[in-house]
Length: 67
Picture 1: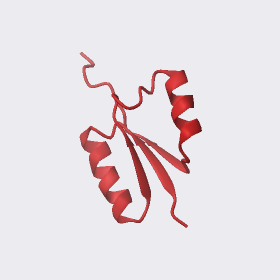
Picture 2: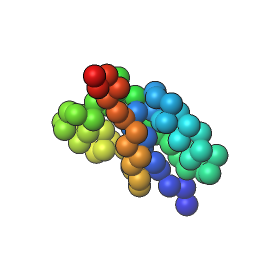
Picture 3: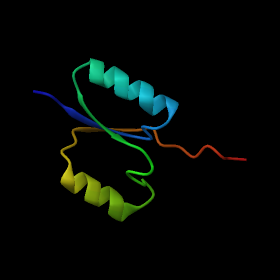
Picture 4: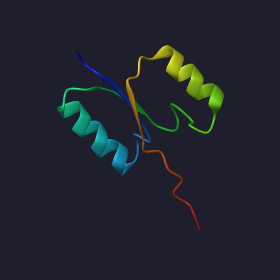
């Protein structure tokens, strides 16, 4: 049975590499860039999860302008 994984921050380097690794391992990968899913918006997160079957979440989204 194929497992579904949601990768947040899929537009970044870690997210892109993780998507490839999990895809190669046979997972169905849902890639969410910030334009697709703002993880700081609870309503968007709940809506996304209610519309998609997700077995695992890899949270790779990050804020890069820390200084």
